[in-house]
Length: 335
Ligand SMILES: Nc1ncnc2[nH]cnc12
Ligand SMILES: [Zn+2]
Image 1: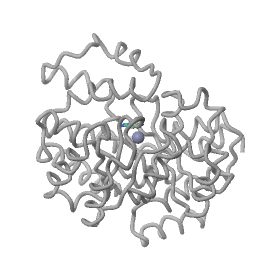
Image 2: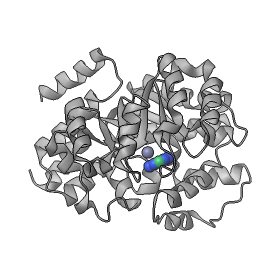
Image 3: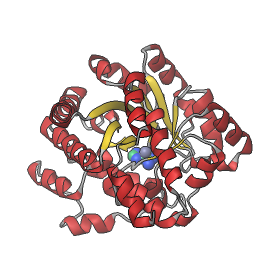
Image 4: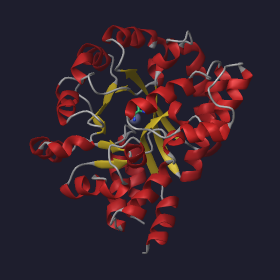
């Protein structure tokens, strides 16, 4: 298959997305509509100005605009619309199962509680489930630039919605906020029966990946591309098959790699790590899941068997039931 054929083939393949921040799927159009609805002043005159502001030097320069953008989300309908728009993209990209992160503290810090955003998210998810059988799980992510106490309070505030949440995660500014800072709250989450993921080794060192594994007992590492700096860690990840949820367009937009041709995803995959492809914050980084696969096809010497492995890995690395997994992988193997 040539590159165009590979792109078409992967576009229609049933896929899974495991690293997606719902707040990072807020498109400029909805951002401007909601700013107007709630009379919120943003430093952008129009949609073109929003888009042209999306030039980032590093993770923090992105996070500043991401939190600013999220400030337009205020009532239940806003959260419904945000989730609904993303789920429509899943349908378009044939993402049959998705595990979506949301950042409660981005909203609770502004006085907007679980009783506002959770019903909005759930309404959209139920509707997508009913309309086309969309499978969707939610991951509650703690902001690591805030204190562990704030994360504990967030976990406590989520009590009424724990049945709707599959896992906890850890995101926001990585450098200076090692996983060990959140040992206690991850232990509490584990005792509540929640699964665990954490961003590590995106901008931060390989040591933070060890920290996420050893102190937080995570099932998956979000990003993890800096694992390449530590041969012992690479050996461990090959052995343990801890999945890495890699986000190619995000990594180039945030200058983790200067160019897609320098991305190490194929190296990690060929070494035998359990690597997956994801979009992270699609509206900020220029593409949804298919766009991320297409970028790899455009810039790396990636072949059909690599793509098959990446897609299979994301089914295997997901938190869907074994039965559900077997159903999809069975269909995949039978062509
Ligand atoms: N790529 C990313 N890294 C850390 N925190 C985030 N929050 C949203 N996207 C993020
Ligand atoms: Zn992320």
